View 1: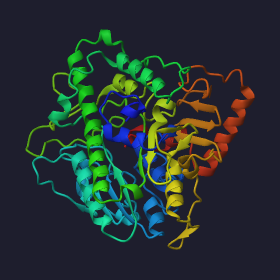
View 2: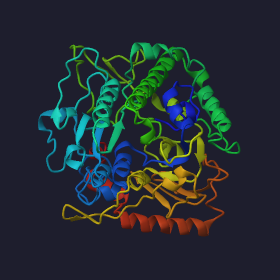
View 3: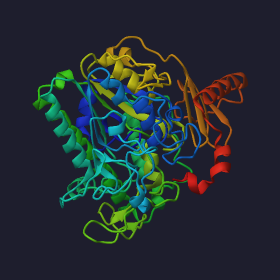
View 4: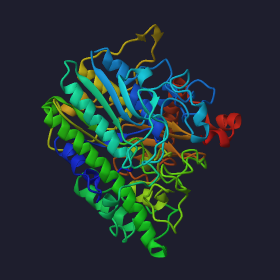
Length: 517
């Protein structure tokens, strides 16, 4: 989901419940993720950088330290940490930090075995959801309840709704218990495929016939009006791989794709509304801190991860053939299709920034992040200091009064990398204790104060002043050679400390076909 895909961050999509959280709490305008789903989740769940936690790439085991493809034994999950303070812990939804679960290998899945840790094995008291990455919303593969595969019985199954329903059950049960509880609700929406319910799709059909260029500029203007982006930051040009809307012949099909995407987000917001109302019904709303964020920028992939169709079942649950691919003669949204919304719409999702999920320019790593609850400022106050998903665990244990241990169950732990955001939430002065760094498939970056050094693999380093140019349009590297060298040193020191291996070396060792998994 892109930076501007929810209403409180400029979108035209109906997200009244997410917007309500923002109005009652704090909005972070410079929250960062790790550019891809599983690395971001590894960082969020452990308070470490992905490579330190074992997910330096994706969830295939490359056979190198830091690239095992699952959470290693040198990290502590947020569930394990909070249990030290007496918390009950639950996960509703996607895991994706515990090994590789392609449909083609379904009979050989090793759920909970060595190299395939599950939420139950990493501190969660319960889990309902999927173990792997993407998949059908009507027939998700790898669906489990507490490590046992679930057979879908109901005709009207829709994964986004079922995640919300399980979260409601958890809240009802925990509200009657004595212990405090932590609930991680990990929706898959709006990850491909484009699957949504007809009534939600209908709400958006025809809304996108003005095209992606119109959506991008409209969102940019709204973001400026919300004061989330500075009016002096120019919107990035349309991506070079996109085309002007006027040149598109099948506008109705493109409108339909974006309508389904919007419907997926709308339905997720409806689920969040159900969860918020359940807190109210149980009289614990005022005692509960709620955080919302996304795990990477808008996705420009042609529906598949680097060419692999391992997430597509050949048949629907009622026996119809599934058509994998973006076929313009088919209407998106139904269970027998498996489409994505494509690069031009992703470019709109990430407005006003450039590039996408997978890259570490702002379009790939900028996340809408909002927090509401006790001890948090209200009224939609904007926090402008750079924050990162690596800060989530540190924040949660600080709020819960839990100390992070140096050892856990006899094993030494890597010290936390994140900073607690609690002072920022409370309206006190806060700034980062260290620079932020990124690496994903050779894409690299350093953020230090107002400067960002960034490289799009296999290209050279670029330098941007984020105060005057957060949309990264004016490269200042040639005029600031000393600063570039200083920040390169910061990156190299971080990479060595965190176990980052040069991407060229990994490609030579493993091959691009393996790395697509």
